[in-house]
Length: 496
Image 1 (cartoon, rainbow, N blue to C red):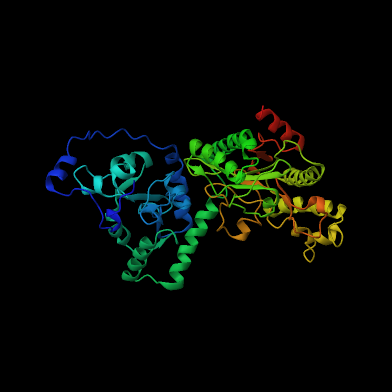
Image 2 (image 1 turned 90 degrees about the horizontal axis):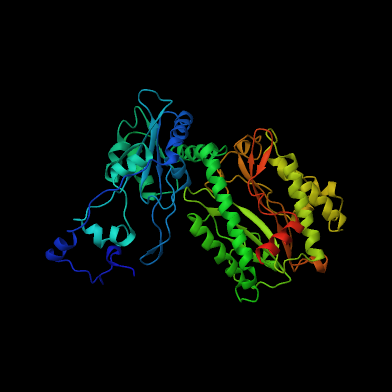
């Protein structure tokens, strides 16, 4: 049931007389439960301190984001902005329209002060409680009170109505003011107005300050702290349970007119039960669909003689997500052609693992995987020249069948830290605490006339989530079998 009155519709059948309002506001237990301090609250102060040390003399505005309409009076599920989540410690669907403000302390500018502004729980005597279908407690559930939020986060908390006055205080002479862009248009407009009123420049200079905030927030997440690593382990473990559930239900996908969606649905059920949901749209790509890199339509059939490429991740309540891919023989056994491609991709993945260690440049992971694939493609007679010629900048023929990168950072976003500078990402040396994927693949589309017919319509990717340690790397997703014979055994055991 959806109510339209709070969205401007005139068809409400809700009573509005004084007797009703008095009656509905009475007789409620007003006890407020104890609020526990979040584990994340022990880590967010250091994150915020690092931010103010980088962006000196600036009040930093980090909105959570807003609810977005899906259709008429129905909103999409809310998921806060990743930078907001990182610096506030909030997760799940907490808390639309709220804003975290981070600024240097007046006593010590190398230390941050943080204030959280949000819409707290409305009283039982307000019409919002029973009449607001978007925010009301009767409609969407209970929000915390100001004291509850303060206890959970360990910082000062105020009503969202106080945000403007706080943002404007001392701006201009003592402080600059900037906002995370493209998250909340109304907060951006407020910041722009306050800057103009206090003599701060607009236009390109204001945009540059916002871009610097986005870049800093992205680069700070390149190396994960202990809390983040624990959350990533949870996300990976839940994801592997999802893969196991998919394998158990794989026979039910065979012959279904939308068997790919059967697979997608099984994983989604596990993700929703184990965490906040899926971290990104699941790829459940059978047969030739596996050669479409971001196949998320998932409306195809699944047949027993095909491979199915499943790229999926559980996002836990803290919003950290795994990103794992396994390519499974639907019948339980690889055909010779499927095995040939699979083993080549596994060899490329193993080559990237073999070189991964602190001090290696991030781009060298990709180079190691590409060296293997170029040589295998040469052996199969698919390249118009040698592997060495293909690996040269002016060649790159092998990339016809492996067009994506081998690795990307992983964390709050499935492609985490995406606004980091090139020298901090592709050209950076690996450091302990970094988490990224290793995911080579080969994709031979069914209409590719440059490959033998027996290879057409086969796509393979193997993707693992990797933590850099002091002396190497740890494969966080190693519990999901990778070798072809182990994958076959895995399927057999789970389907008994």
